[in-house]
Every structure is written in structure tokens, then in C-alpha cells.
Length: 378
Image (cartoon, rainbow, N blue to C red):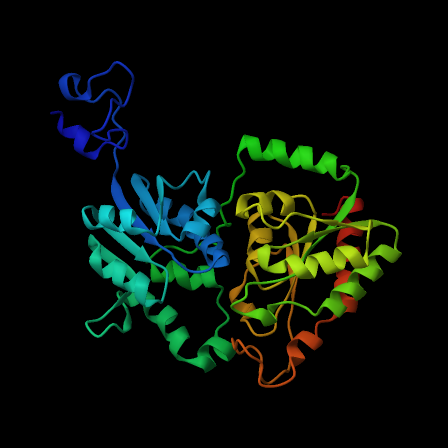
């Protein structure tokens, strides 16, 4: 057997790489070396998955000849489709775990500070392990010096909530011993999806000249206070509609069904209520249509960043310093509020951070953006 077959990306050992060509008898026809074999473990929330994609260009700069595998949850696999940096995306399930236990990598990069991801990291065979694992007592530990700062952020509230000014992409690059160059998120539509987007635009009557505002109205159930009140959304939409200028799209996931339906009924025939049960790829298609997205710190915000939309993001319980809008949007946060950020699932006070969202500034910044865009300054 041609020794190249062992390290050729094209060869599977199941069927010929090219029709009619016998790889075993005739040798490798088109050698595509695997190079450095890299496994990324990332089983966190959907927004974190998108943020981690910003590390891929740096990984390729460091390992130009490489094969990159990514293990993620079943519901986030779709976010990594059509990604030119990835060779294989694997759902976190029994079959994948069996394959990984029989495969050897050069580098494993675990993003997550979690027991399950740490356990998987320790089980996989690799020459180098970066990020986080677990010790013999099941405690999460940093595996390399570069992961120390990231690890400490989880242990030291003052460092995380008050002192840290670094974006998540910055200290994650350090975690993986990568050069940080503020690379963009990586998310690409297929030709079929681009066709769907154009057809949907026509279906809902959106023209190229239209000024479209997307409202990402909700958030995950894990941190329910990352969304505005319905009353705040009603006030904002009322204000925008009063200008007789903007078209409004309601965006979100299955957990936002009741909220979006309420707003659609409140503004019957005046807003576009997009489907929320068609999966993350279709959700991205809908979110690609507005030029500007108003959102809390949620998956919808990260998706807007990935889609290179102008983002008006408000923050309360989460750390606004860790989010990079790439100079394409603004962040609103409760300056001077002693309890924010806090990362609490239940507010011990009166949700002051949500009440403090500056609706007037959201309106002002939205109008300024579209005015600049109309004048060709954006």
C-alpha cells in the first residue's frame, strides 16, 4: 500500500477517492496531506460556537497544512455547515465518541470549562492538549499556561466583572496559544440558502431600497433576563412605525413563539413575524435580511455579528467587555449599576439593568445609522 494513503485526506479505506481508480494497487492519485490533525471540542451555547469560529483563521495561520475536526452538540452542528476551515463536524453522540477513542490527534483544543467537555478532552489521544480538562476528582483544570487567564476569569468575580477588558476572542486565542488578530466570525450561506433568502424577501415584500430593522426579541431559557420586557418592545416598535420609514422583522427561536406572536398581533399587518421553528440555518436566513439588529446578549446577537449586521446590543447581567462588535454597532450597558454584570439566572433585586435600557438612544442610533447609510457614509 502506498504510505501516502495513511495521511491523505481523500482516502477513507471504504471506496476509491476517484471513480475507477484503485488507490491500493495504483497508489495515491492526488495526495492531499492531513498535516496537523486538530480536534476542537465546543459543546457550549450556540452563541459561543459562533464566537469560537473566529479562532479558525488563526489556527490555519499557525497550522497551514492541517485537518480540523470539530465536536459540538446536535443542535449546533448546523452553525458549522459550509465552513471552509473545517474538514469534519461531528455531533456529540455515542458514535462520535467511539470514533474519537480510536483516533489520534496532534492537538486537541477544548473551549469549554465543563465536566463533560473536560472528560472528553482527557479521553482523546493527542500529543498536545490545550484549554481545559478534568483531574482525577472530576474538577475542571487548565491544561496549559495559556489557559490560566481564561480559567481565572471563571474563579474570580472581580476579575471577570470589573477588571477584565479583553474580548472573549482575545483570551480564547491565548488559551490555544494562537496569535490574536481580531478575526471575524466564520459563517457562510450555501447557494441554495442564498436563493431561499431572495425568494423570502420577495414573499414578504422587502425591496432593496427598504430600511429594515430586525428585533431579536428573546433569549435562551437558561438566562431569561437577557431580553427586554414586552412593554419595551411595544414602545420601540410603536416609535419606529410612527416614522413611516422602517420595516420591522421579528426574529427569534422556538422559545420566543409567544412573545413574537403577541407583538405580531399587537401590530397586526405592520410587522413581519418570521418563522421560529425552521432550525438555526433558516433562522440565519431570516436574520440576514435586516440591515440593523436590535438585540440583547444572546445567540441572535452573535448571529448578527457573524452576518456582519449593524448591531445595537444591550447588556445587563452579562459581561459587555467580552463582546466584540468589530466596530460595527454599539453596546448599551447600565453604567454605575453596582450589581451588573452578575450572571445570575434570577435577579435578587428589581431587574434594574433591564429597566435601564435606553430606548431613546436605541431609536436615535438606529436613525443615525440609516441616515448615514442613505448618504453613503456607511
